[in-house]
Image (cartoon, rainbow, N blue to C red):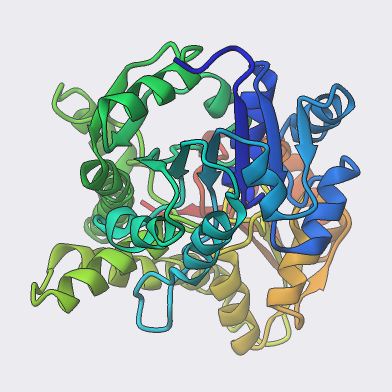
Length: 431
């Protein structure tokens, strides 16, 4: 069993690595962390996390002050000072959709080179990787050093916007292991978890992560497709959804229609599954359709707005919510990017606002102007599209829309506003 003061190493301090490391530190484990990006390393060491997550800054500063979490100067320091090392590096999409494992290979090589003593270390892949990657890519690199390693795979199930809570109180833990000894060590590390702990083979643990994201992405695409059908046929999606939810076989979560899914996981992981299957000679049908549906869904909001406003050329349009969802500053795969681009192509002047993601988003769409408040974005606008579900957006009233906007036309792309309270507003939403 891992003791209450296990020495844990984290390589990669993106959202997965930093949150994971903090959670272990808050459970009194001693954590050494390092990121290949020197700016990220430096900022984190000074208590300035490189991304926004509720509660992150305060927790980071506390763990740094108590030295439960220490930012290391290099990978070798992490390896030498740890018994369990987590690989938390990114595995982005290549242009063809396949998984890019370059960062993972580099991290594994640095571990192999950094373990100078004969202690047996447990190396855990927490990056999202295709089934077989840990054993066919990571293990051979580690074994070249001639030193003893135990290998595990521990997929993350963190929801951005509540990731720290998810890490501290996981609803389930999946451990892919190569031996009973590895299982004992990792179960000891997660002894604080109240949810079930599933121990599987390494390949199965890798597959569970992809299966989860592919299924959730499919639910979102299905909800959007069904909402579009309901709209076409003049049926209320709300009533249909209520009826669906009465079926005990159907979980109503992730069946809320909108502009489509974004973020760092769903699209990337579905693309990787499609590309990997194709590379093995298997042609998938459902998952490519999920991606296709998501790549056009955002246009529903633009078309609904245009249907109310008319020609968008010369019109001032407010785009509210620039991160891929509320509670984060992550703009990866945000549906606000193609929405803003489509509006600009149709001649609109786009004024965007997000409580956290504004500067990052403007790097993606520099042609868009950035407002410093909801009111500034809405003032004088001829229409507004809601793209992310920030709590302050939910509190907006019909009176504010009528008072601030040149023409109170609102398209709710996340179904966060109550249409019954939108008196005097030309209000539309998907479904």
